[in-house]
Length: 185
Length: 181
Image (cartoon, rainbow over all chains, first blue to last red; front, side, top):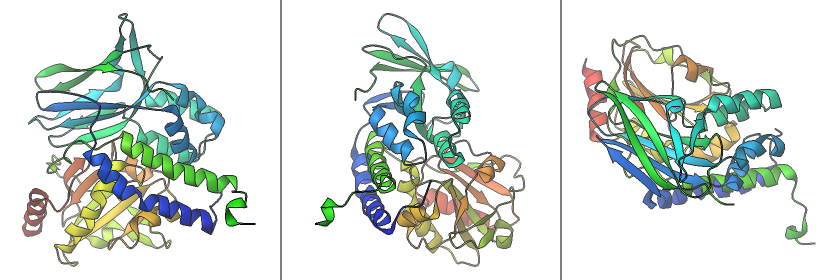
């Protein structure tokens, strides 16, 4: 990607300068979906395709290459371990359940990354993508929290729930986020 | 012809739209009510992996040159909302200690120095660039932001994943304990 002109950099700086107050506003905002149990909290907000396209195009994706990702049903997920035990998650164990009972898995980041490799997406863009996702394997010490984007393998119409599994030394547990819906553009 | 009549090149449009998308995503990804708390001990205190990266002037910064100090190593990116939120606290905690005994190294992942400088300005501590994310892999980072405390002997002592306020009394006390070890 070529470097932006001085004018573009100024424009970017002005925009970025607005991030701090905006982030403060965001901090005051609520996650729209939240569930907790045993000191573990899972949160989610739907992400529109348009915002994802703009975000990833700015990081080196071509319009064509990011299109499949933009069409997917996506969320920002946050998970916080405020309990006393370390926990771990594997995204492959999570799934969504539609109103009709249909189960859909979450798409693992590695599956997208395979596509980016085939599409010749630049390395910097792939690095940004990789670390902006909710990771396939996560480990949370007490006090840790992790956020990232996640997509469903297939869209679900209407409302659905996400069943998220995590493990601690006492065994396997589930948190259910209810009444989610894919973002409309 | 006014300036508003000038055509806007695609690259400029892309950067502008991207920055604005960052704002939209920041609003769509609100931090949890509080940042995380504290840092977890690293079992066994293994030697910290090597960290030798260039800053925005191309000057190499080597973790090894800070042996004898406690060093807080923070992996981050400007597009990561909790990274941005915690970043000012890195400067605050840096100011709480003498430069001869404590240092902060901020490792930016995969971004252009120009874009990073727009956010950091003069950070007050070294900001280095892990352009290919190999340092992240060597440090077994699983998510951003990720932070490590390296003790005076160059060993990994504590780690944290997710945002923190580094001048939080609990973390400051952890650093003080490492300094008197």
